[in-house]
Image (cartoon, rainbow, N blue to C red):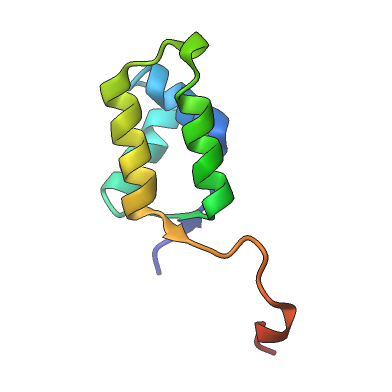
Length: 88
């Protein structure tokens, strides 16, 4: 079974700043399908809102790649699941 992860926004920011280090390595694992990224629509909105802040002055191509990765590889989950639908 492939491990599932939820990635904090700060990890994405760090990975946008540099392609070296642990944060970038985590995103490389997502891109290589070694782990499954789990996101919700609110998480995706937070990723986008933070990564696109002008004051961070992040590389637009890297930001686009990270957001595309999160959207395409992220297994979107409902942030507020119906408690009646939970098995067991």
